[in-house]
Structure formats: C-alpha cells, structure tokens
View 1 (cartoon, rainbow, N blue to C red):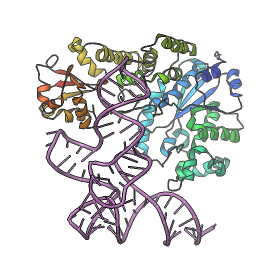
View 2: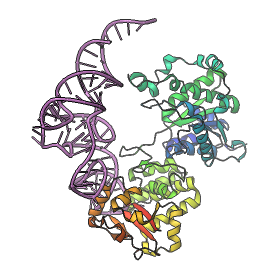
View 3: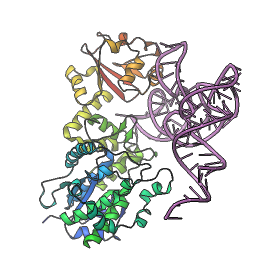
View 4: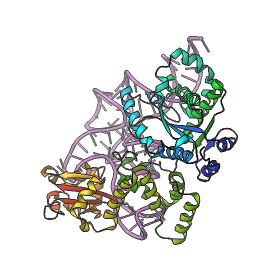
Length: 434
RNA sequence: GCAGGGGUUCCCGAGUGGCCAAAGGGAUCAGACUGUAAAUCUGACGCGCAAGCUUCGGUGGUUCGAAUCCACCCCCCUGCACCA
C-alpha cells in the first residue's frame, strides 16, 4: 500500500493552485480515501511544451508524491482537431505526420517530470490516438454524441465568444473537440479507473464534459480540478519575453536563458511563483518572503526560484551551466575568463556567432541585428548613442557604427578570437573571429 | 441580396487634399534611479550607417500634391430580407 497524504488538497489550496473543482468539496474525501488515478492532457501544438505547461505537469507530480497515480495524456488525436477553448479564431490544422512527430517529443518531455518506477503510483503516458484511431464514426455518434446536448455545449464560456461573435465562428471540427476530450476521460476511467482530470482553468468546460460523460457512460464518479492561469502582476502575458516563448526544450530555450527568465521575475510575482513552480513548502516560501522583506535590498526569492525551476527542468548540469554563464557575465570580469571557459560559454547556451570578413564589413547595426541581439538597426543605433554597446567591455559610440572591422581586430580579441558584446544591461553575445 | 457602418504603422485608436512616416495610449528597446526587480523620469519606436526608400484593405483614376476625393473589387460589423 502506498501512503496517502491526506492533506494534498489543502496543500494545493495553500499554494493557490486550485482554481475550480467539481463535486462540492467531496474531492478531498475521495483523495484521502485511497490512492487514485488522475490525468492531465497535453496537446501537441508545437514540438515542445513551454513553461505554461509546467504548472499542470508539476501538479501531476504533487499528486504522485501524495500517493496517487498520474497519467500524462499526449493528445495525438485531439492535437489533430484543435481545442477551441477561449481561442479567438479557428486554428490551422497541422498535418498528421507533423503532429505525430510532436507527440513523440512531448511524450519524452512529459516523462521527465513524473516517476515511472515507484510501485502502485507509477506514472503512465498514453496517447489518445490509440483509442480514437480505430473508432468508427457511427459508433462514436451513437454512443458518445448522444450524451451531449448541443444546447449545453453552446452555453460553455470557452466557446461562447466564437459562437456569439459573427464573422469568426467555429467549425464543426473544433466544436467537436470537447467530445473527444470528454471521451478521453471516460476511456481512462474504463481502462485505468481514472477518476480525476486536472488542467488549466481554460479546460474547465472540457473537464466537466468528461466528468459528465464518464457518469453517463459508466455511471462512474469522476472529478475535475483546474489550476489557475498564471498571471503577472503587471498584466503582461506570462511565459513570453521579448525574444519569444520560454520553452522547456533546451534546444529551443537554453538553460541559461531559462534561468535568466526566472531570475528576472518581478518581486510581486516571485513568491506566488515559488508556490506554483517549486516543491519548497509553503512555510519555507513564506520564510523566504519574510526574510526578503526584512532584509531590504536585493531579494533572494528570484534566485531560489530560478535555481529550483531550472534544476527541475534542465537538471543539475543545466543549472550549473546556467549559473556559470550568469556569474561570468553579470558578476565577474570578462577578462578573468579563461580560454576554456569562453569555449564553454557557447556550449552552455550563450548565443554565439562566427565573425568572418563579410560580417566585419557590415555596420554594427546590421551585424548586431542579424545575430539576433536587436530587432532593428534603430535599437543598436540608440544603444550606441547611449554607450550601451560594449565590445569586450569597451563602450562603442555612434561613430563606430561603420567601423566594425576596427572594433573587432584580432589584437583586441580575447585569446585572439573571442569577443563578448553586451547590448544594454542584459543582452550578451559571443563572437568568434574565424 | 438590400440598407447603413467600417478596414490606418506590433495592438488599440486619431487623422478626412498639402504642415503626415501619420496624434494619443499600450507593448517593445535603450538610458537614469535601483537589486539583472517594481514604480518613476528621459529618449527611441516603418526600413536604412546614410543618401534615401516603402506604408494607411486591393486595383485603377482625379490632382502640382491623396491615408484623405472618385470608380471598381475584396474583407468585416450592424439591421432587414432570403433560407429553415
């Protein structure tokens, strides 16, 4: 028998991780009674999950740690349809082979967060294409479709804006999405006695669809729990930066960038995020917050957050790499770096470009724009005018713009080939003369 | 299908013949202050090092000159009709 942590639900609530739940608070009792099986779905809409998926992913882990069995469902079938929930417009369908490829990637990504070898509560990864693939349309319509009232479905908040708004509309295909996800739940109930689905709060409509269907098809009692949408105090969208989405895949977002993302969390969000994204206890987090408040000056919350989350996602080595770049760039002297350390920086995920004659013939504005440091030459020009472009620590001026070759001479290079260019306060790029 | 309203630079949204690369706000970038935070202040914000080049749903036209006027076309919204 697995030990059940009966305080799980309270714990989740204390962390602010409960947005909505079904069942008039009987879920707590249900979970306290025995080891239960729960699932959460991840649709393949890209070749990697991003940090938005981290909350449900870690929550699955929290359930597992409390003695329950998590199922991570990768939506090989639902990903072919597209979830309309709270989407303003109809989505473009991806081809089956693209989706299949993404399914594979998400499966392994999801797998790193849950334990597959811990006895009764070992995790399972499933793909809903397995049961949808051979399903007959007529069977589906007769056995599943019959349980859904279109009248109810169009009342759901998640599709309302698409139904109400003329000109946008919703295709029959997307409208059907809810049936598919509901069927997933019923199927997992049948196959694995899965009695709980968790998901982001945007999934509420789909989840309750599933609990209803499970009851209608199998008379089973099924629960739903949604997690809050992660928001930031300044109102901007969580998980995006100027340079794009923060992905979990190290090849898409380096551990260094990932670490930096968390390090840059606003104070106002920091402790909330510690509760969402780490396994530190609420008491520990509150103690950190209290200390930071008392200490004044630079808080430790962000570093703790960055370290914990980076290690969770990228492991010890990823964290070490991220920290080593960070300390080299932000707290050390660039000239203290050894040749080996400079080589390591690129391997650790610092953006790097090679500089050849062609590159040296461009204005700095073009060079720094082309390597992705700035979006437009204008930005570089502005930075130059304010001495915000540093090449190996030396500030460049607007009049240096056309003298790229003189800025990157071999004599000025570290170890005859390396340059670290800093644009603004936080953007670094490594150049190597070739 | 008919009638009315509308499509402006990343987003919202002014502009209705020259003073418009186009008000204002948001987002974004840089600077100051700080703590690689927030708030605040400053600057930038179509592209280009520059000369200059390309924009205001599309295509043609009127004009010395158009985002602004005309014609046709496309798309959206709101009524009505049609359909059921």
